[in-house]
Length: 424
Ligand SMILES: Cc1ncc(COP(=O)(O)O)c(C=O)c1O
Image 1 (cartoon, rainbow, N blue to C red):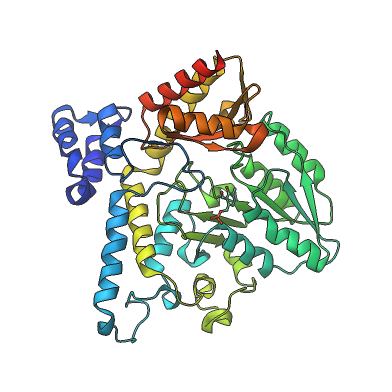
Image 2 (image 1 turned 30 degrees about the horizontal axis):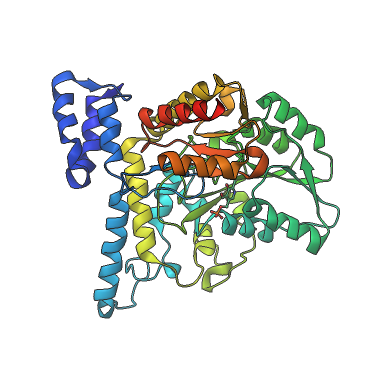
């Protein structure tokens, strides 16, 4: 249940940006609290998104939907920089918000630190996951024969910088098959631990596999890797703004993420977190004045030449929007809708699942196909019949169907009914 205090707190933002929620404030005044599954509450949250009313968006795993306030904040700052460029005195990059590449972005880094439970000094802003992972792979020194362990289901943006390390420096990338669907967290854990040897120097894993939605047992794996002196880095492209991420609790050495999927920030926004003991010695891949200035380690990596401040203003608005709702509430809603979809689809015998049958490994991503269908056919049918947009995963794996806070129970039920009809 949402306490009255918390609801009214979230309505603090509403007073500025979410006027539709004021009726909920009145309701909360009367009842003292509000059920978080209340369709009215989520309908009003849905109204904060610019998404077209005639279509249904099920693909934040590729690119997210921006709340209106994000677009407003971004365009307002774009207008400001276009209008007031002459006002810029070039005196203090950290105060004058015209180009981002020379600003330490401390306020944003602090918010990202709050989001993942890390110190701002250990956070660098990047453009996306691919950048962050490349900065880490290129910044570490590995020798020929050193091993990097990873899974057979990594995204190219997380894996490729390690493959380059293999080709260029002779380090070996060792791929562990974890199953699709994954059977259980224990099974994944056992398979990965079995692959570790005294030569293993890095463990790189997706926290959540993009092609199945499986949440991997990263805390347990990082603990074992740590005992063996293995550097651990997690790809959080699918987790940030989706499931709760606590870098300290997980105990990983590094974590990279983006905000343009589940947080709903403008495209081209990401971060990397590296524990201070490792960040100090990591080489920068993109170097400017601060490349060797260790006064602010996160700034060494954040300083990457001229960047786009309006986009970062949009990111800040997206983070504020997320905090106003609360990470736990967002997760609960996503999981509630994801489980509703899986439960419905599991009642159809012709549906083949690539998401795990272990519900503990699942949240808002469900990957499935209909017997004899391709992903392209399923994707096209959803669009033709109902203007719904999940994403094809190729011939075998069907579609990746994501649920988010802007979706409704009705949309999920309609999707299940469609699949039931197609199954015959
Ligand atoms: C697991 C995973 N890693 C990396 C990426 C690449 O992310 P970005 O485009 O932010 O670099 C994606 C994108 O879908 C992904 O799902």
